[in-house]
Image (cartoon, rainbow over all chains, first blue to last red; front, side, top):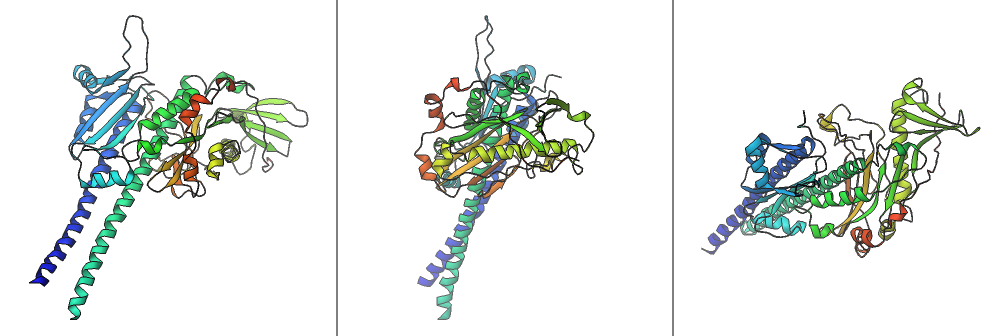
Length: 156
Length: 338
């Protein structure tokens, strides 16, 4: 009887460990995908100087797991006497511009930052956070990418 | 009986193997993510800093061809920090990078390479020069078409155009264009080797070690963007560069990163990230043409105890330091021209 219990425990331990390994591989691949996808989007925006409805939708639909995406654009101040200086624009402003014109334009010197978070952290996100020292969070930031707008390729 | 002994041993071995696999995979993944994040952050930061310098007219400026010119790295440096930190935080802890020291920043400009240490001390401008013993002349190359020739016998200065010189003017083996590229890349390498390890560089002194740079001199990847990040590329436009030391708490070492980045800002052109390769001795990871990431062998704790540059920038740097610069002509022995 005792030997059977030990045998079952051994099998359980082995199966659990290999399940953990498989889950880790899946999680890291998912995170890799999120990082690469975000980087591609940010690079595209930096060199094109605009977000179109098509690229926006492609970006949001390109994740293989549920994520929270936040996009913020810091406008290079362009002071005009009668217009209030609006230095920051967020997801809502971008979505509004896309709904109206199908394109959200930026200028050279503006800065964009995209933060992609997982909606729920799993066990491996906690392990990775612990190992890398990036801090624990219930919805960890998997990709933080941003930079300056370098070109305005929309101006055909 | 023997089965009773073998079974737990076999089970233990399998468990050990599974745990090892888990740890190896985790370690590999976190290492790669951290390297990639720092690599990307540094590349974007140097690109943006270059852009800011161009925006403020410090690159491609008409004054740069003159002997005296004003350089102010403040804008570029602030942009560099802003862009760098904008890309940190998912894998690499912001707290970790807060201990960052930007030990040397500067730019490879139209005619000179020029730098500034963490304490605000400037380096002397370093020309892309070549000494020809055949005619006893110094040739100062630019990133454009101009070549400034100084005859050391008569001290006469002449401005030449590379495009009008007979092909193989400098070397029978190398075309004029390639000769210029090799000279420029060698001069930037010399500049980094001389000035990074100089006693003026407090972070190198604190860490107890300098760095040896060995930039690629030939553009292997100019025809294939797909391998641009794997093989060496050469500079073909003014570029901001930075060497960053930051402490990696995970491996308990100082991570040193170097990036020489630039981007061409041509409207309606897809893009071209023009960077130089960095192959740094003692670096263990990822020497690409975008940035070299690695771990120095010593000095982490010492470096951490020093003030970070963001504080230094507020307290120690003096805008008055940005005065008229006198170019320093240096020569390097090279084969005689054909």
